[in-house]
Length: 57
Image 1 (tube, rainbow, N blue to C red):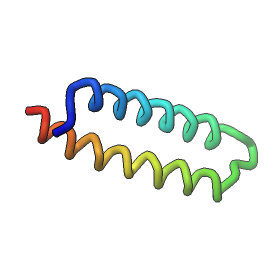
Image 2: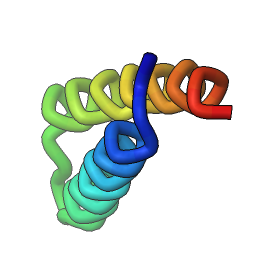
Image 3: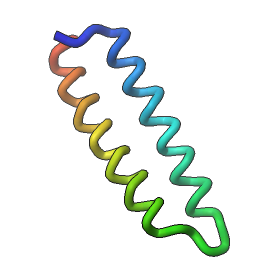
């Protein structure tokens, strides 16, 4: 079972990835491979947050 601390940690990591995505998209010539990797990691964290939320509640 995941704890509230784990959920908070996942949410922070998700927010950091979201910021990295914003920065990469703001470049005049964004690196699309990097964007895809960041997005994939962000979606994996989103899934982990959903599972964690169900387990904490």
